Length: 125
Image (cartoon, rainbow, N blue to C red; front, top):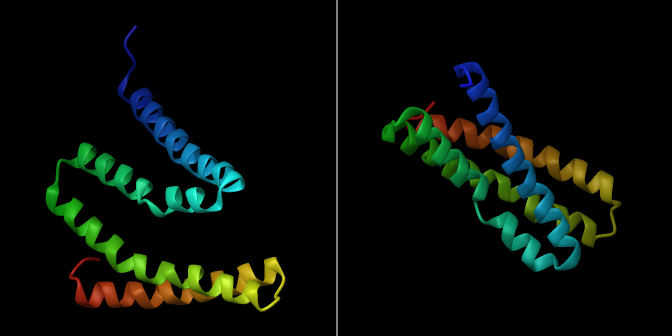
């Protein structure tokens, strides 16, 4: 029996969720054994690559893919705020949860600024 289109859509979404979730779980488990290798796996833009592939597969629109990757470029920069501030806070003796909360708050502010700059200077919305 052939699957109808709505089932295919849910099947594809479920597959995408499993792959994406598997990457997160795999990176955290690998990070327990070797921090540098776990960090390497997370630093590789696997989720971005998968999203780019799925976007192109769904739309076949190279202009949309180009805009999407330009947006990623603009927003990678604000994400660095988390990776700069969290180790600084922890290194100065701040507890984990307050450090993470403050680093996330600063990262949210950086993302807001990054979104404003991206829409103003990149021409994407």
